[in-house]
Length: 125
Image (cartoon, rainbow, N blue to C red; front, top):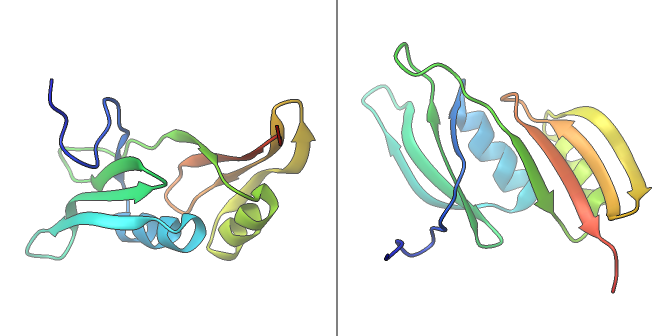
């Protein structure tokens, strides 16, 4: 089996209201790199791909045929507190403030498109 470069065997595919907001959010908060962004004649995103630390997320704008399909996403970051703060500054709603857990420092936010992000910094080894 050959998987295209910059893809992995399993990737989320999100269908979103205002996918442009999602693109801006992940770029500002998680330093996402845009791989592809195809738009239709009205400039709505029909297919886009971003990459965060080697993980690709695909997404598109919702349509009459394709209703919104948001997700819960778990992300490891260098500093959960910093990423949590950046998320709030970029329109996210707090679900759980940063706190020490048995598995690391973790927090939760809902992004402007309705996705829930569990933002975690792993425990030092």
